[in-house]
Length: 268
Image: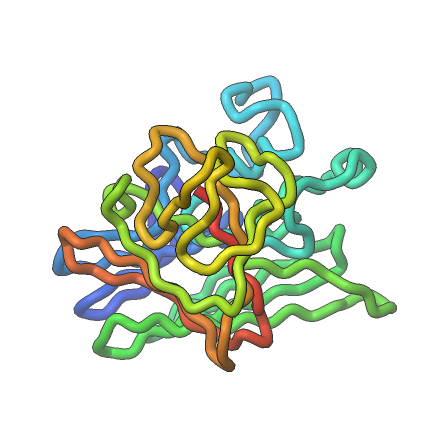
């Protein structure tokens, strides 16, 4: 089926619907049917298949290593096996921001309540599988991922879940967040349109402002433009965060093994 012009697949029960796009493998939608709320971000610009992007035909997405990603990103994006921008040499070899997993084509199979997406990452020498499972009833989505190294040697990799929430679920000065970090810290250097004091430890949710005072990170910013970035070491064997829309009453969040992903970053 098509989702915002993109080839996609869906699974659903009576309460929620999950949509995954084929190119990039992004979890684009987790629709709460009763309220019509999808907490995940849909870009305000037209979304195209990353394989169709070219600098000459699509200058609106830029002319750099981020362009192919921006052409097709939405919702929950997997960063593998790179987080952030590639080096100049890596970009020349064909890597884009956040790695191949964000732009390659996934093979998708659906059965009753299960969506399985698989992808080969030829430049990284990895194979990736994600299984998304819905029960016949309820609003819990189970996600399991496997990465296999098909190369001949062991090496470190980056494996990051890049989850973006968006409007109308996300509202300035309204949406509330909960998490339980052991410690929190602001970004090490001035970071775009950020009013935070750099390189400073703090106690959640009161992040120190550069000009004095604090920003309460438990409520989404009211600033017109903000790129505040903070990092949080999460407590307990199971880590989690939630976001609450006070108007619809919908609370959306993730829960995972903290040993797999000990840190959570928040970027406005």
